[in-house]
Image (tube, rainbow, N blue to C red):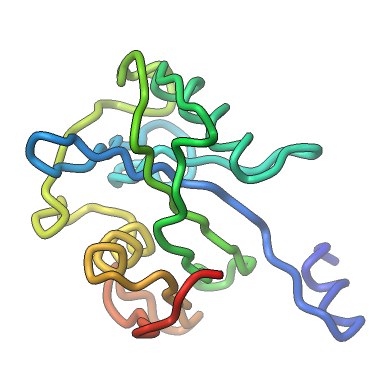
Length: 175
């Protein structure tokens, strides 16, 4: 039995926690995506730099680490700002809380520092994302652009519609 299932059986739900970086070019507003490859989750789809929070880390520490590991980018945690949170579950998968942050400043890179997991990096307009963008990433970026700080992207086990069917909660503010 999974940890999530055990927690639910006790009357509480739990979620895996992941962090995501919306790295935006200041000159044209394009955001950085990486094309996932190999046997990693999301292979063949575009996704923002992201990773799991490791034991002993807070979300900001995890994102600073992931930016360095994946992109060779150095970010100070004080330069990160919450952008949007997506409560997400793929069909048949475990619930996840996906935290997206923007960085007002960074140094170094970005370079493809994990070529075994990422085929290439690209800069894209938020309203012109590649068709093969991860569904909840598309939901997060469109919510962020619309000024929403929270969205639900819950995939029914009987129907998976990549990027459609997400419920956005308008006007919800992050605390």
